[in-house]
Image 1 (cartoon, rainbow, N blue to C red):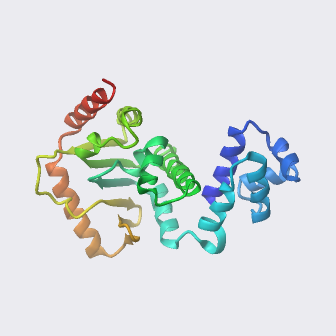
Image 2 (cartoon, rainbow, N blue to C red):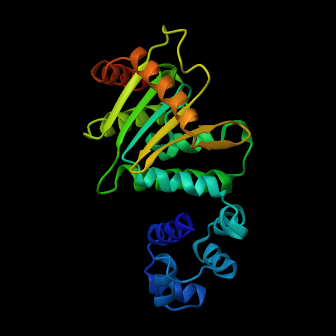
Image 3 (cartoon, rainbow, N blue to C red):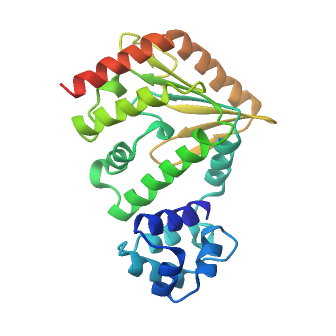
Length: 262
């Protein structure tokens, strides 16, 4: 629901409409629009259909309702994980194939989500904007977590979305790396045998413990058991030992960015 109300506000502003102007189009007051956008008034499917028509979004909000809101469509574990991201003191994230979701630009995210033509345009739009909303909620909050990302070198060379998209993505990586709370490390291709061969994972340290997160083509899971967390921690420490230093990693990202623009 948080994603939905955030999107309602973002789309209205992008369309250049005040709350009162949108209210006129969907037959309600600016007070009602304000309440919906702040989460203090209930959102209905009827209202979302009217907003879709008013903003010419092609049924986008109706799709969000059906796939993420209706009957608690978003899995409880995913909502719990988004809460953990927002409250984490630190996040340690390993990705061998693509950039971590919280470091992706909008165009890169859309290209990733559209791979293989397995989802609809509305689903791509919904998930891309959701990813950016998560990025904003985590990295741009007043007390952002220490965010440490370890990535396979191939991530920098894989032309997701084409050279222009990758150039912008790598430029963004260099910009975000200047933040004191963001630390990027590259795992070189020539480290053939490493603890990351079994796939990506995330560790979130909270005030009352630690959670792990792993994704697969079928489903994702959140790890809470101490022994599972211990396994992920051991894998993380091994991976970090095989990674380049932060300075060396930034230089490699910079070189990859220059390659995209030449």
